[in-house]
Image (cartoon, rainbow, N blue to C red; front, side, top):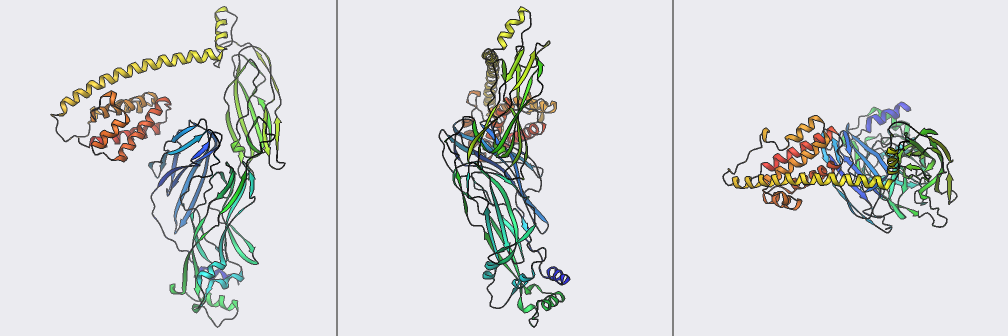
Length: 632
């Protein structure tokens, strides 16, 4: 019997598909579009339809605290051997100030080509908005499902036969459906919800997800891998179905209110065998299987019905954590946690840096836990912490630990006690706030010799060094000194830049005088006149600081000459107007403005990233030559 079933499946149920050539897309979205100062937003960067994604470079997020991320999710579909997939990076962000923010486009390298996403805007208000609106994910291919790749229960084979007078749509409705289930319908902010999207079927079909569910207002962690094709059987209203898990995620609510889970959509090509091609004299299933195994069903003997299934909308009620009894040290942690503190060493000198680790362990929204406040005693100078995660994201809720490493310095010898650190969280099982404390730590600091490693300098016995001890032990004085040095350096730089701009203005005047006798046809600048020559030299030397300075100046020099703009008028508005007057496309103008924004940002954060430097040089060179081909 088993052999007959296998022959039946191999003979009559072949996969069909449609190969689609789609362009690579790189998009950015943020949800919600308006939040309060203490609320969260989710930024998602998605590359679609790429065969291979080599790199996704997030934009600058200097105005936000990254609560979680980058979190990666991916999906894949295979049709007739052609694989299409998407990869997305997401970040949970908390703003550091109020106002209107524009997050610039991100960069991606896919299929050996460079792509730029769209910029996104976010409004941050002083008060909580309770805004549950969020990003609208586009329909992305996710899984290609082949239900009943293994033999189905014997009782379902009769459903494969389409007899005269039967309505195929009605037969599909009775034997195939899609559902979404959640383990909880009412939770607190930060408490996880497990959502499972299921396909129930008693039919043979090729199924492909055409719309991924969106989860607006949630931080999302996938529990099941997208390409997991396993299935199990379940009884629903007394009938047995093969059940495929389309997607299974744990969702951490970021907002309060009724948050709706997005709809998933699956397109199915359901295959029936027409009854007239089966031996209608066979009364027993054994005879039918035997006859089918010996026959070759022609294409006209198979009826393929295309049907699209959707999950029904489902909402989860998200409650705010109670205000009553909320500790001052509560920062949004929900779950059950412990805290531990350690120092790298208990005995060190005044020329050494100390390191203290705060370890928060347990289960809950660990990925969103922030560093606790450190009660540094007088005489110890603490600095901002660095966080590392050691999380098990397959458990519900997430379990593991988060480590915050605080560097600190001590300028005066002695014995110090670092007090216990408090950490508060909301335990959803008891529906109570709880506060745990780390152990206090005692350290002994002795006088060191040599040059201190930290910015704080411990005084030596000589009178010449005593004033240094007093000076550098006062943070306000140190900050004031560096502020004065920075301002002086800025003044020198501005004077030098003004001198360069004056020289540039003279060049522009000469260019304008000679423009009347030049021919209308312009050619690409020869190598010896390349405005980016100095930047190219710095690129080869891997000198990031000078590279971005010369790239910025070279491009501005070119624009001043090409657009006949004096240095003092070389602003974004005038550049855009001049480009438009020359008939240069708006896309080119926007690309130029984006490049100039990135160059100015890199002037203040010049890290030696050869690939990024090469990419920016190529973009600038391409734009320069493109603009140079237009005639005024």
